Length: 373
Image (cartoon, rainbow, N blue to C red):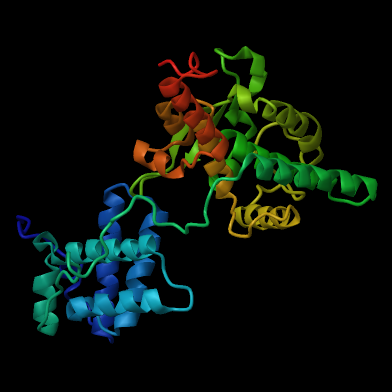
């Protein structure tokens, strides 16, 4: 039997099924079919699940099914998201618009025959409710909170001083928890020293620490193989290798202390997760957030700083130290140089040096030779 060239929707394959709630039945079939389409494209299950959640929330807000949606529903949904107690950020709203647009594209694609099926069952068909006049345009590169920034040199030193002092305090008082405090300190130092995301640091195994033949002085800690890097457009994890840099070579001593002396107190195995809890499980992302907030507050640093500020600081410092933008981009795993530029906010010391060199180059002075190209 020849296949219908116009395409077959999940409903065509279930024509003999009679649901008690036909509207709900069709809506669930739409979500199931869209999930299959995304899975066929190779998108990660987490991405598919998060998109489905957005569509379910939009359907619940509209109080109607997709074949009844109109552009006004999207506009009301956007207004509600912007006016709630904690307003959604522009990037979050743009994400909602993008997901709803993709879902409507799927429903209105004639290859899936949802339009014909809905017209036959309900007398109305899905339409694209997102258009250029009611969706948020991308006007600036960075739309996060202005308070998000890199730490200054004094702040980063203050933060790590508090983290190290916590270990000493616990030992002096003869209390439990010194090993966990040492682990926490080393986790945050590693996040900074390699510009890692939280999930990348948590997902590390001991085997991911490798020597770098070009820099034998760093021994077994010349590079870190990141296997759980952030994917692009719903893909799976993206891998990269992050090299140890001379300015942050102090991280190798801390890693050696953790792996050789502290970690064996949590497990007898030499392989497996790098950062373990007292129960032998991998440290969680939530724990990382909570511990960072606690140390940040003890260091009396601004409350808007998050763990991601350590990665932000890494990018900023590498630019200040003169590393090429392409090298920085590869180190932190950005697909585009423009993304790296968003994270770059050089400090006043760096900018003052640049001004002094420019003044010397133009007017002459002690830095005239240093300013030559």
